[in-house]
Length: 60
Image 1 (cartoon, helix red, strand yellow):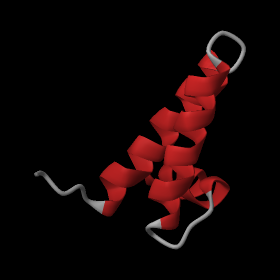
Image 2 (cartoon, helix red, strand yellow):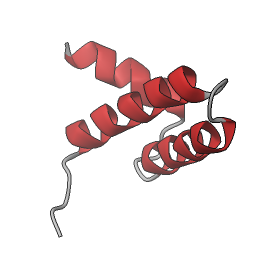
Image 3 (cartoon, one colour):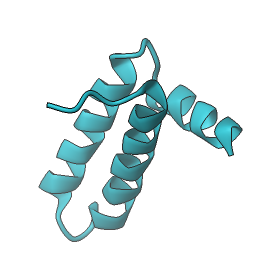
Image 4 (cartoon, rainbow, N blue to C red):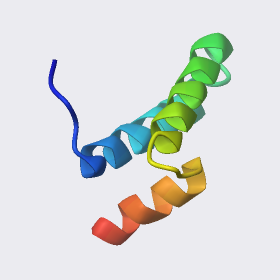
């Protein structure tokens, strides 16, 4: 299995959060699952989602 870098994980968090926002009205269960996964990935680096998104933005 490929292990992701911390920078890749930040991108994954960003993508999951965007998916959550795009799908929450259409597929609320899937959107909620995406949010939980984003929280888990961010948490694996000791971050909250907002912190992970801020770090991702700082990389641009």
